Length: 197
Image 1 (cartoon, rainbow, N blue to C red):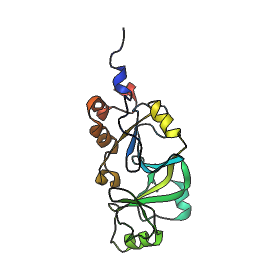
Image 2 (image 1 turned 30 degrees about the vertical axis):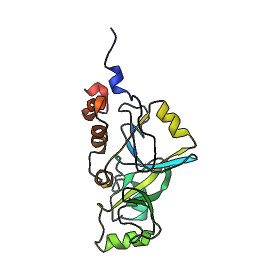
Image 3 (image 1 turned 90 degrees about the vertical axis):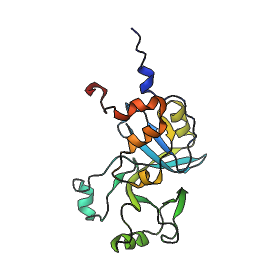
Image 4 (image 1 turned 180 degrees about the vertical axis):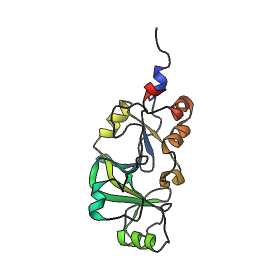
């Protein structure tokens, strides 16, 4: 007997192209364990490369031996991806007037900038995790690699609002899928393992 709902769990047509400020939403049952059921915020995109941060994977600082060596961090940390895994990177909403050398991604969200200025704002209480979001590593693609993955239906491109992107504790997956609407409504409450359903 033919299963008529199989296609509903797969990515259909992509109506948006990848660009800075958009998100990549992976297929819910993707076999890649790093990117399975993940949402990636694109912070840079060109013909030569793409860079982004996974928004919905947390780093357990207390259990990670790496952080026992460098000491306690005064902020929460997300796993940004498997590239540059020895670096802590950040996005923020403070802007270049507050954080010199930061670069606007889109919609008032900025990448990087003077780390000392960021730490000073956090240490003084003038900035919080609502203003700055830190990532261990990032996700990266070489020339046309991301486009090939999109064509192979590993990713669908979508949009998220600034508040959801900056919120460590938001249900990013659910919000991203909800914004896709249509056939993707079915994805909202899917378990990570389809056998558990």
